[in-house]
Length: 158
Image (cartoon, rainbow, N blue to C red; front, side):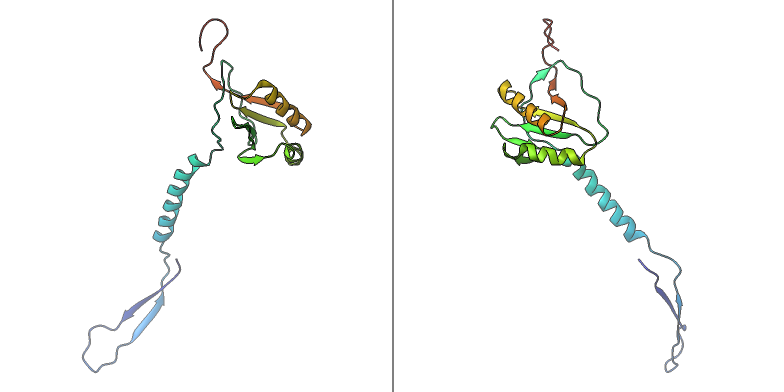
């Protein structure tokens, strides 16, 4: 990826005659290695991007509610698994350290929106307790995450 030297020698003379080599700087840059590296990086990012989505396997309840608008910054996601684990994004958090961690996160964020993902088998009382902890941690704008296509309660399935 740099400038090189082009050598041009004296032609095919006789034996015994001394050859002279003239060197002049090459004024071209070979961009082929650069393009190769960029294409490899592009392929790596195209393959890795779909894998970087935050996701913890949770069996969300079905509802007929419409989807929320996408927030400006990446939303904070709190997940309650069927096993009773509490996860902030993908990091497991103990119940005693939940509110201090939420307060630290709230101090760094400009948006107080948080998405609560709870497994459908979790008792309602537990979900409300976590919502109270979210409120105590500085998050008052709580969105409950569900799957669409659930019952509409008007006698028709959505």
